[in-house]
Length: 156
Image (cartoon, helix red, strand yellow):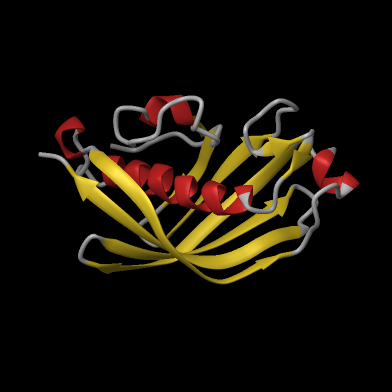
C-alpha cells in the first residue's frame, strides 16, 4: 500500500503505543526501511516545553517517537503491519553519543515554528533497535544528534 506523505500522526494511532498527550509528532514526512522523517509544529503549551522553553531532552523523545511512526509507516507500505502487530510497549533503553547544540532559553529555538526529526541506520538485535537520530530547525540548524537504543514488544 503506497502512502501519501506527509501524513498526520493521528493516522497511525492504531499502530503505535503512544497516546495523547504524549504524542509529540505531528506529521510523518517520509518512511523507508532504513530512514524516515517526522515534523513537529511547536506549540507554546506543549509538554516538551518548560516555562515556555523547548527542552534539549525533549529531542530524545522526538527521536524515539519518530522511529515508532516511521517504522509503522514503512511496515504499512510493505504490507507487514497490521493492527494485530501493534507494539504493546516501547521503552528507551539507552542513549549514546548525544550532542545537544542549544541551551534552554535559546530564542531561535523557542520562537521556531517547527522541527524536523530524521532517523536512520536502524540495527535490530532481537527486541532492541539502535537508531541514529537528528533534530533540526527548518533553517537547517541542528539541535541534537545521537543514537538511541529502543525496546519494542509486539502483541499478537
